[in-house]
Length: 451
Image (cartoon, rainbow, N blue to C red; front, side, top):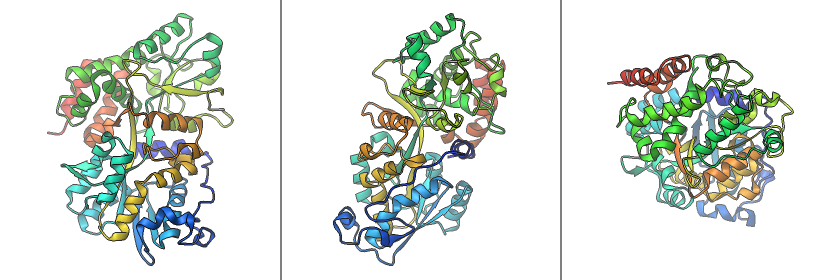
């Protein structure tokens, strides 16, 4: 999670009441004595980790209020049932501090790493430890190979996935769709046909905003990544992110042109907000709001956007707003763009290995789902989704992420060098919205790539 991602998630959760995890079988981290006694039936799932009384595992993460409380509650049964103590440090400056600590030789036992690129940097310090075989077995059982690959560096598996987020969504008004007979598109061609149908009625179908302070432009990068994954496929997407193909090569160029069919089409945008150029001056938080006034019909944005609707907005299939999966080229394609977190260890003490294995289990993923809020969604197929205290959007994200056909890829700009992913890509994407050609845009980003 870059500074950009951290900032937008902080904005997204503002004013949202996160659901607290109910009384767990083995108590809470605030009051261990309130849970089941060690050795009880409720602690049977934890017997495999042994007696860890008096042992402490330090965990460092950039996850902060209110999500840190939800995370700590998922650790509570492990603490109560094993006797271990999980000592969490929650710090917005995690991404810079963890590298400093690792290079200085004083890292925590566990780091919750939000980016594959940062994970690779941490492994390169020589201080990280490969994941234990028990953890790897859980990942092989509960996650797809795509997810495991993000925790693998130079052929060695280091880090199990934890939570996940989904970006490949289009927000809409269920009432409008019902009243006008619109149906959720199942292919990109159907999405274009729907857009044309809405535009023909004299109503601009799309609304968008990309303004975000110093990070202005990032929503365009998400659009382009989604289209690159859909048009060129996962293998070419990976090459693009790693700069094994040039940013201005045919695949990326076609992807940005595809985005332009929607965002730079005067017949399509910017419903309720202005013309195409108004996208650059509209904040990303406000970008989808015209849907509520019936001024636009469609808005592509991640699942976290649920928190940006005004208080009292019903977000559900029969509510004021909901979302559908941004389709692929065919109805069978399930390309999913998103983000996630990984547990990387800097110690191989038994209690650290035990905790890594616990968090990679279906038991932990179910606890996170029961907690709801911003920690519920995971690609862990061992999670009991029926116990999820999820919003309908989280349930949708869960179903897509756990679909066996889903091809998941991380946000590409988060994995690119900072000079590109959080600089040139944002700036040139903004210039593109305000009139710069696709050719000039991709050429300038390619020229900025670090030599």
